[in-house]
Length: 326
Picture 1 (cartoon, rainbow, N blue to C red):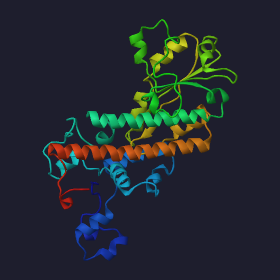
Picture 2: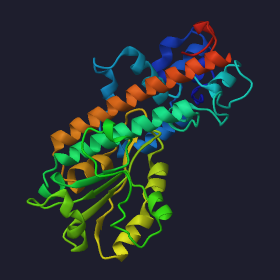
Picture 3: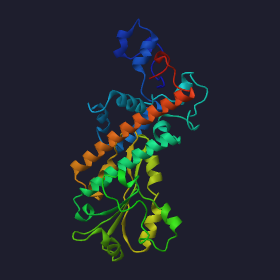
């Protein structure tokens, strides 16, 4: 996987490898090869924005070996997919066996459009949104602690906190066409409510400019695709923000809350939770740990579902593990 840039003969080997004299050139290459492949380069670019030690979570005893197996292979580019099947001459096309798009580990866990896989990805997203909403309830800011939350995260009976709705309320933008308004769907729309007021007072508070509106986007991305995904998600709700700002509302639109599909955590996400949303550090840490658990569990579900569907279609990996990477 990694390109060889080391010595071409045992005579060219550096001094520390003098003890290799008489050994095969293959052994010399293995010990002198440098990790300069595409995966290492991708991780090198994203390391500065990662929370230090965030990838160690997968080694905790609460994570089954099957989950750890999938996550570690995804991080190292070894998760079995059609691209690797072609590399090992076990398939003729690098396209996904379920949706037909170009296959990869990132595609498998993050962008496959097969209905079953999409359902699991949506469940992962909704679970993370609900965890963020619950953390906001524990904010140090009293007006946020008592906030009225509109949450686009699945059915009401699945929610762990009460949501006032899943769409931008009509009273907020009454002069906007309903079809357009329904397309403005942030994951979390929070209206601060001062202590002593009830949720029924929110429209009046907003109209009196006595309430701050938080527009939040929560998303999962490929662990090494942080910068690309942030560029897309940062402007996703700009139209809604512009409409609210034009009406004179006080709007807070922080950077998107991004999480890696392999459980990686990013510094800016943690900063938004603790500084912008005023969530205690201990609660923010607990919330992110739970979202890491959600990511690992979802990865296991997605891979298991795909393997089952591939077996049904007769396109599964070879049964002999000696002939394929696990």
